[in-house]
Length: 459
Image 1: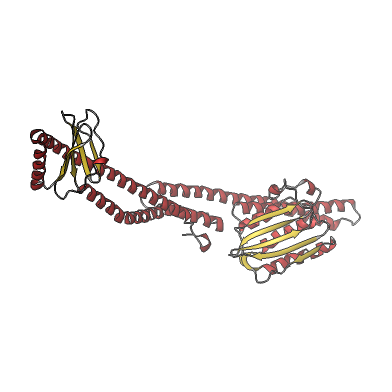
Image 2 (image 1 turned 90 degrees about the vertical axis):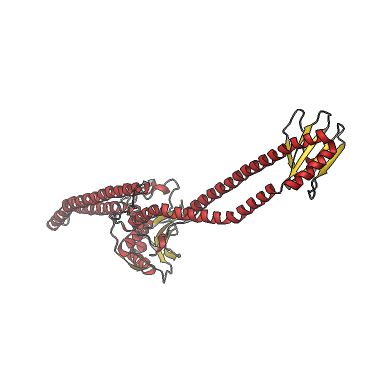
């Protein structure tokens, strides 16, 4: 709604959130697969165990009644009637094989891989190679093994794994796509809110509001609460602006009258009169108070987001040349060199008057604290999105402990208290830079000079 090409939404968070939702979906799918697989395996094992246990009693009775012949007849009968693949093994007390036989076409039985029954156990079952086996101890001390082969569990497991392999990728894609759509729609009100906030910061238009989403819910409550906060903030800003206007009017009027009275008194006072000197001092102080008031109001207006900018295309080289020309004679009086480095073909949008004032404050500040080299350099640099206006000097520098506070209103370091000034110049520089949606920076080394930098967006 209010975003510009330089304020495109940052999709990294949305991407991480979508991948997180997709990852959780993948974990749920994997958990369902392994959980269902475990349940299926348990059910198949239980079914096979029940079938082989049922056959065990038939085999025991056949051995008990007819011995080897009975077991052979039973296996043939089972093969003919049910088609089951069954195997029987009888071991003596010394583990020697007394009898072993199986239905026709039955695979080899891995008897050695089956677990021997525990003493007294009657329902122990073990499985290997597709066979499920159980054993029973006979009264003679021999052990009767019964094994049943079934390819159904293996086929079911293969089919189940194949089903998961073919459906996992589509499920994951669907989960990630669904998560992405969910994130996009869920975060849309937040992106609108961010766009409105950026619009207000960029333009100072406190009338902008967030369009609440349809229906009810947390996002609508968020939009309504944010709009209520904007409404309250707009009233506060308007009240501050009105207060500033009233203060400016109430203070400027008596100051103007005072200046008029003093100027009138100077015209009527003799040149050698003591009163004339007093009136001149009064006039200078009135001008100083007037300048302080104007600067304070400008800083307060900028900090409140109410500074009105008259934007126009600006050539960086011309702007620096205007500032250098303004301070040319002041630099000559102090035996200083004011240098403007080449900055052609660098254009950007801004308020020429206010930016010239900001740069002038920086040059004036440099002239107050000249070093032995007495050199002040104005330069400009352009990046893809920014224009960098730089004022560099080889002056006294700024102490490291004072650097964080130099932008504060009325702050003056100990070394600068004897120099003329109001302590508002750098505050105004910072306010003008921020009004342009930029920022002011400084780097300084005590005794070696300072570099002040204005970072401004090109558009």
